Amino acid sequence: MLETLLLQWNYLVFIMLMMIGLFMVISRRNLVKKLIGLTIFQTALFLFYISVGKVAGGTAPIIVHGAVEGSVLYSNPLPHVLILTAIVVGVATTALGLALVLRIRDAFGSIEEDDILAMNTKDGGEK
Amino acid sequence: MFVDNLPALIVVIPLLMAAVTALVPSRLSNLAWLMALLSTGTSFSAAWLNKSAAEGGSISYALGGWPPPWGIEFVTDGASALVTVVVSGLAFASTIYSKPLIYNEISRGDVPRVYAAWQLTVGALLGLVMTADAFNLFVFLEISALSSVTMIAMGAGRNRQALVAAYNYLVIGAVGATFYVMGVGFLYAMTGTLNMADLAERLPGVTAKAPVLVGMAFMVAGIFVKAAVFPVHMWLPAAYGYAPTAVTALLAAVATKASIYVLGRLLFTVFEGLGDVTGLLLNWVVLPVSLMAIFAGTILAIWEKDLKKLLAQSSIAQIGYITLGLGLGTTQGISAGFIHIANHALIKGGMFMAVGGLALALGKRANISNIEGLGRVMPITASALTVCGLSLIGLPLTAGFISKVYLVLAIIASEYWMIAALVLLSSALSVIYLWKIMEAIWMKPAPHGLKITENPAVYLPLWVITLLNIWLGIDASFVTTSADAAALALMTGAGS
Image (spheres, each protein chain N blue to C red):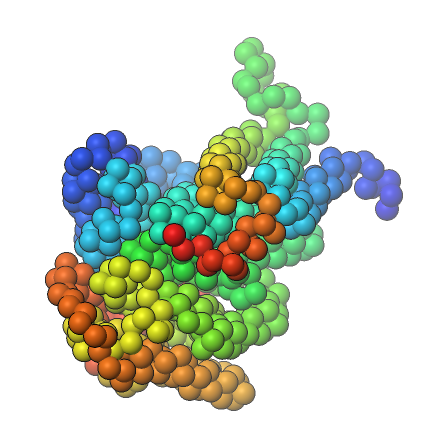
């Protein structure tokens, strides 16, 4: 059991990172720290996909010139392409999140969730 | 040539037009609105033509000429055809209606950017429905989420809580979407494909069941978040409550509907071959959470004073009715779910439009106390709100009645007597919050010296939706036959 787990340490790392990220998103009250947690959470996902795409003994999926067809073992390139897209989505999410945090700081003077909640219960947020 | 490319045009037109709209200078903001009108209108016509073209069968469209399962496939079958017509139609109606409200609530300089995000949302939601590729679906999910967040945050001009609501929606939505892709990763690792029909074919043959089940759980949980299914709906009331009113009308009518469609697609097409597990999921997860959603949403709506938030809470309950239909797992139940997807889009779209009309006339947020007596000064808007409200509780001769009848019949056919009784009880409870609104708006004396001339640009689109509520309550054949075709398409598999 332990041996199987250790041999697949890349999946262990993915699960640990994912849980750290999710825990940060849920438990931190600071809006920027939440976003950091979200980024770690998404990065864990990227590592998972890359791990899945690795073929044992396979090389980078670039055609080797002069090699006989079928003689070279390639890794699966598709997960890399998918994760490229997911990284773009992740960057866009983080950017939008940070832009919102800036606006929240302008509007409330704080990026601590507890302060903001207290202000909202006091005045309902109306201008 | 044109007709062959209809499935792609439905999605691509709003997406491309969004990019152009973002470049419109602020002093030409009318042009931005016209462009949004043009693209949603064209998309609606394309969806309509595409639905007729796919009548009784299904159309598979290979994007970029790459044949499925390698390339991305757009599938038009009974289910996606109905939902694209509903989404694009309601988006078109909301666009017509949106102009006076957007101009009122958002500074002139931002109008073109809001309409760009508006069209991105619509295009992405349509893509979400059309695509038969599990990963492509994630990309559309995120485009729609990011653009909706941008629009919700624009409510900050009126109430700074909109920023917090947008932030929470962004973070919760991103976690949900990541869960979904994680699940897709598990399925891809086990099957080596991302095409939904292909997945459905290969999943039963996978011998190691554990990763498949983990993947399934991740995907369903992620979509639950996006569809605002109880108990992961917490982002919705604040997001709908503080977004600009026109944006709320658009999102309430179309946004969660597309995600619920995806839920049905996953449960009944992709996981079709895992029948016993799907059955457990439906019985022990989907049915209980639907019932909890119905009661939690209805009871919170009874206590809520702010009209937009009240309607948002009621949306949670209505989403519960739709997932309850899906949760039955029978063709009849799924059909009832799809009938309510279409009808609830009309009901809630209409009600949010009417509340927006009241708020526009008042110049501030509408709540239970400041709408007192408005029925006497704004009879056109107030009566539209009343008709849509009666449709919401399911009075005969309205679209909502058809939904309730088909849902209850489907529940009885599955012999869940308790659930049928609970659905009727919840309908009775929803009368309470509707009555609160009706009492305030019609039975209180008119406010002193308040002169309001109603704006035709607001009430004309509102009344089109309202009349549709009545028409589809009298002659429901269009919705019911389409919903039956949708249920059949989901049960028999995508495209194949």
